[in-house]
Length: 101
View 1 (spheres, rainbow, N blue to C red):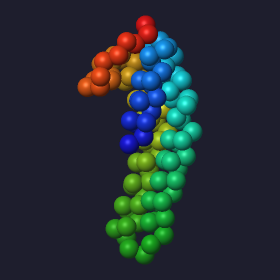
View 2 (view 1 turned 120 degrees about the horizontal axis):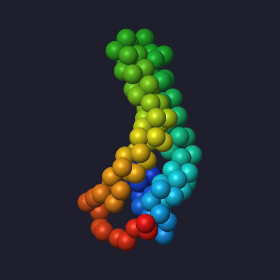
View 3 (view 1 turned 120 degrees about the vertical axis):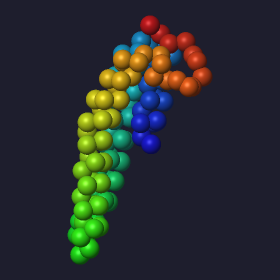
View 4 (view 1 turned 90 degrees about the horizontal axis):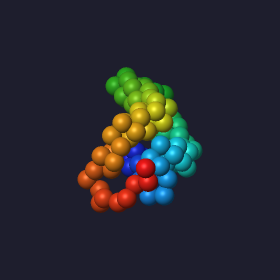
């Protein structure tokens, strides 16, 4: 999951930066890769909408929309916001390390 990729980048940056700055850096470092992967995955499911089977058209459309919502709303806004709200608890149950304040 790409959330793990982003959070691990934030976690790594939080060892040497304050949490908010670590989140900014982590999202910036992983944003392009995650967005590209989301667009490719949405396009892959979008291809199902070209098939003559109605069930696959519906499945492809709904899944593509869901992936795009996740790519452009959940990952860049919700995950960092929740990480700020939870602070050090956002990294639970990982090994504890010193976070810069």
